[in-house]
Amino acid sequence: MASVAWHDARVDDRSAVDAVLGGDRDAFRVIVDQAQGPVFRTCLRILGSAADAEDAAQETFVTAFRSLASYRGDGPLQAWLVRIATRIAYRRRLGRRPAEDLRGVDLPSAHGADDPVAATLSGERRAMVRNAVAALDDPYREVVALRYFGELSLDEVAAATGRPLNTIKTQLRRGLQRLAPALGGEADR
Image: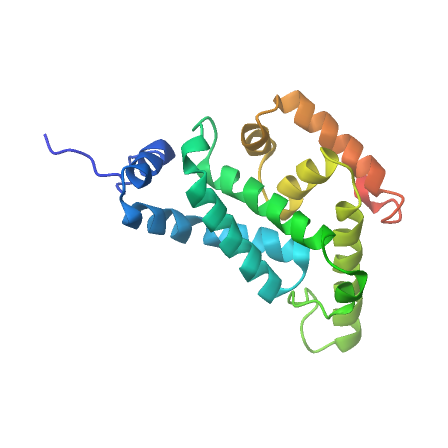
């Protein structure tokens, strides 16, 4: 029987991580290729700038490579990477000078490029949401960001943070309740 290579579809995240730890740099390249979309989108939603998101995503993968031995394998590798990305993006965002937040938002408009007023309002709304989430205390900021910016399921958030699912549900509900005043009550919906 032929052995199964780390990059076969039947092999789990742990096998890919073990391959990287064993010195196979191609395995890490595959991990990056598979996770770069979600990691970049998470950083973009938090930072609002494609250039800043690229820098944060790159820092995420460098950090992940250096600390890959700490990956326990009890949750999806992508969720672990998105958690790292969330922390790095918020650290960068909170470390910014306030004047930097006045730059334009690079996210594409949900209303299309033909309506500049709608695009401006949409960009302002996204900036307001990012600022409100950034102002939350941990663990609420982390859970809300992983769930909505990182697009992780509640189970994936629980696995990424190492917290019980019911704790994640409670922290998410409380985080959304804390966001409601800043977002005009829309966070509870």
